[in-house]
Length: 318
Image (cartoon, rainbow, N blue to C red; front, side, top):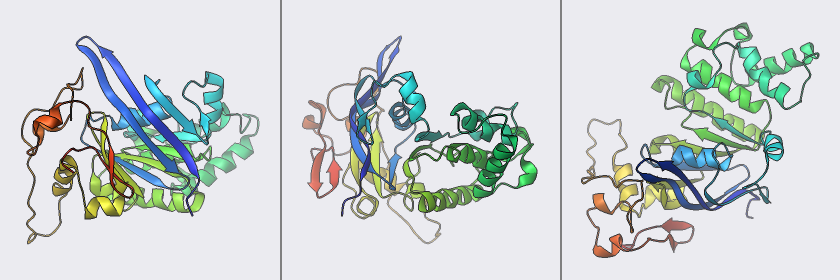
């Protein structure tokens, strides 16, 4: 039985005007996300992952395309409607130190969204205090930290504050914008396990953005691979690791470190210049670095094709 669709994105585009021309950060991306599932979005820095997530929740205004949330077209929703939708669409930012107000304590940070959305009144001090302590306990923060400031805490605790702030509104959809990349490796697993436990408990849908395939392997139901603003491959997580089809995906997978000194993998080393995202040339944007590229790869857009059930690839060689 198919799960109920929560989010659908159709031909989404986000361009930025620069002195050198139009930067194609997100270019004609389409996908859907079911309730309670996770779509991992991977690719190297600058491929448009974060811009995609921020455009979906309208922190960036889309240049083109459509965004549907629970069947409602929110592409052109006004500020009043978007404020209402903020209860259901939230984001966990990459750098918890930069995303937290240094002048606000832990309790003030968590309270802020509750007050802005009118879920509590400032006069209800006891109700606010109780709710803040519930949220802190939910994300593994000790009550003794309630009056602490961000600079007094380590990265893992700061990210837990960011997660508690998001949970305060009980959203259905959360954009996770590289939520562990700024943390020590020893802390990353704790935060990832927390996010998995929260999803199991509350049924959140995640758009999990990362440059690290190994991070999303155990979290995602599906994975979408992006390169210079384009989706180049999308399929179930199991299929991607079992049978990657796009040359760029194969290169990413070959770069995953294996903690075994006796294991020797054949690394795929990419050569050539990265194409510019500013007024990009026709054809596959990966062609300049692909060992298999032909003239056909450089002539016109390469559409996504379903090469096997549920497995989509933008490559003429497949």
